[in-house]
Image 1 (spheres, helix red, strand yellow):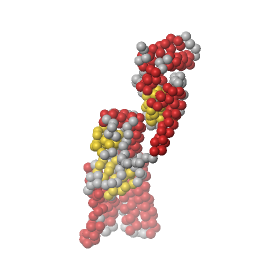
Image 2 (cartoon, helix red, strand yellow; image 1 turned 30 degrees about the vertical axis):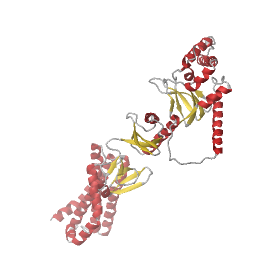
Image 3 (tube, helix red, strand yellow; image 1 turned 30 degrees about the horizontal axis):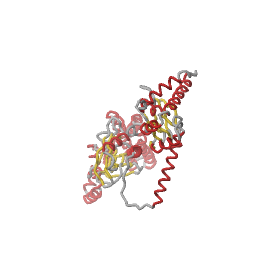
Image 4 (cartoon, one colour; image 1 turned 90 degrees about the vertical axis):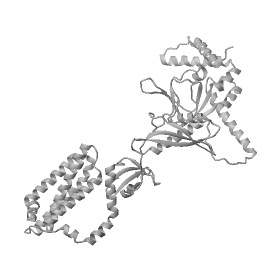
Length: 505
């Protein structure tokens, strides 16, 4: 009696028409509700519906008088499987996903689809007179063999369900197995059998869900989108911890990728035979560029240590030097001093110095290196140094309060800036940044003070040069020459120079 009822429900012409209408309606509804990127999944129900029409046509040609035949049974299975599959997609991935504002885990979709296929297969097979339950019950040995062979697979399925229920990580999170040396990976898919990770090297790692259920997992994206990074660096013992700590903290100011709302810190890790070990800890957003951010921080540390004169120690060895190497070092030093003397001669306010005084000054000054993007001077800060570009390029930027920065000029090799601060201690009128890696020669008040005390008459010549330059700049801005104030401006600048360097009697 039940078979007759099912036959009327499934195998009549009206039931077939109803199933076709429902399948088409479900496919179009899913197409309207699913995101554009997910619509490719509709190929499965469309394939099943096409299979129905093909099998139904073959059945009509082969056995038009049989009420129920193999082809007709198969066509009915394809029809209702297509309708069930499309309906599940429209409800789960369309309506429910939109309401929850979260994508439905793939493992739940796969299990539901398999369950729907089995339900449709069970109903159609029973209508055709095949009892699947009796086949399974009568084949205990086959069932045991299948169960044992699918043990690992079923374990992965249940582990995948547990992962989706507890949600220790989600698609898009960065995770790492605690007991594995595998590199950091981003979760790109969680299916019924395994979880796929994409490493920073572009390598896809497939980890069975059963393995994930038995090991500890480091989720670097939870509970916050940021992580604290740690960079270890050594410094020689002759440098005080406070000096090293201050240098390290200054090194990462405005470094790309470093969070500015969470202050960094420096601790002394340990004392090694090669020097004191410091650990710089900073915060950064967790993404696929995290190792690049670490590299940028290490790069900034190298430049900052070079500017501060801090040596990064290395393993100590006994090296036997030949006497002539001392001569080679002296030759190299003399070459460097000669080059610095030529660079200093390019600065007009230093050109008034005699060769003897300029050579002495060249022996005292030092060179600083900056990475691309690093700030050399900050607008509004006090200063007493002159900078000469040895190689590379810098940008002079005006930073108006409340406005966007304005680039005023770019200075290359041989150009200089900061002369007014060197001579008068005036505040910086603009900021200066390195547009690419550069080296600058730094002349400070301490190095220049002895020179002025030995030849105080140079202050008058330098003040006249600075006053003439300011008059020229004023003429450029206003368009009208104004030489009347040069004398008074010279006197004013001379007074500031004498006060700044203590040249008054």
